Image (cartoon, rainbow, N blue to C red; front, side, top):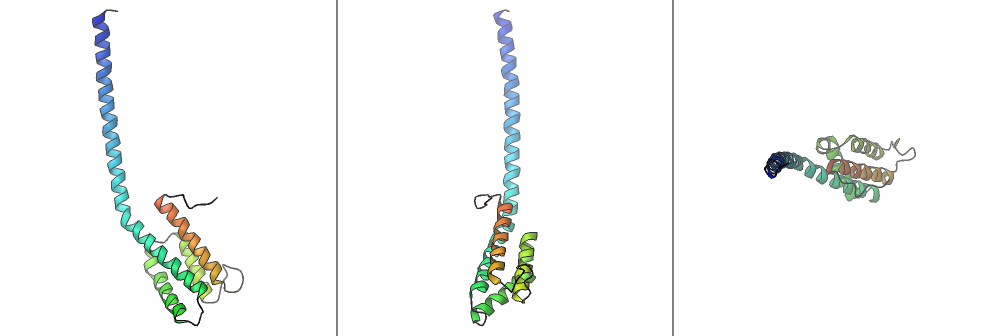
Length: 147
């Protein structure tokens, strides 16, 4: 093989590698832009979901620990039903919905979820776990999962 032929082969390989490298860089950049747009488009939903889940778990904790005859309990129960019938329905997962239904039944004295007397503590904990699991799936974060 002559030196000129070897240089032609190397030159052709470099040209092909440059074209392939440019195509890969372009495709990666395009994919990254699409992924960034997808994440940004979901951000308002995810932020609202986090806000509502945080609020409803605080309310559930109040309902589970406050005296049923207190103003604090009454106020928390009122807010629970407001979230239940409208706001939370916009962002909740099926598991959170089921936990909310169970908590609502518990508040009404029918705690079939707990299979015993109305147990707001158990229902509140179930709701918090359902919210955590839903957030884990929505945000793609597994740090708080336990197997």
